[in-house]
Amino acid sequence: MQHIPHKVKVKIYQVCVRSVVLYSCESWPLKDSDLKLLESFEKRCLRRILHRGQKLTNDIFPTAKMESCAVTIQKRRLKWLGHVLRMIEDTIPNAALELEKGKNWRCPPGRTRKTWRMIVNDELKSQVKPPRMTLKVWDKEWFDVCKEIALNRNQLRRLIRDLNVAGQGQQCLQ
Image (tube, rainbow, N blue to C red; front, side, top):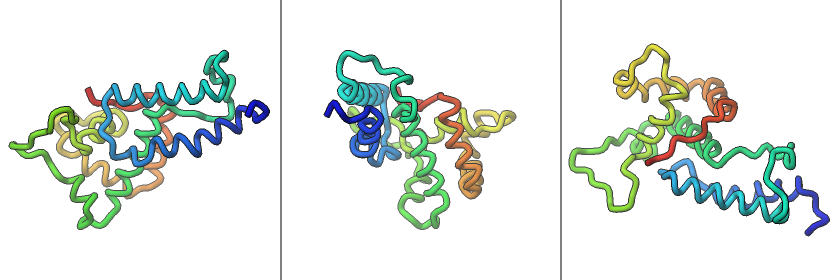
């Protein structure tokens, strides 16, 4: 395996390993500890590719364009949100997105206290919220703003592309 170039090994990692590890991650309610586990797994895999003596730097993989797991998950969530918002309103994903927590809603022990809708709302506050909109107005109207963006696919693609430029990554659950 030592005669295979590092670039090829990284491509194989991205296609075979990373795609399986992050399968359906757009619906995951992540905690900080979960994200740290994902990132440590990724570093461990890349260290094995490089052999143990070398450090992981961007100089070693200039063409790999590796983005963090957090940014990948956030991009996939936004793509899925756009897809769901363009669906017919009678579908199950659309109904689940419009579902609100009730007064008697209780979360099982050890589970996250946020719904998928709350997670996406928190992620989009920093990315989409118009500057003159207050947080109270945003909490009421964010869904309508997102529907407008989802209908305009070019605007949604621009938003997703700019996530990597900003480098902010994902807002995880506490």
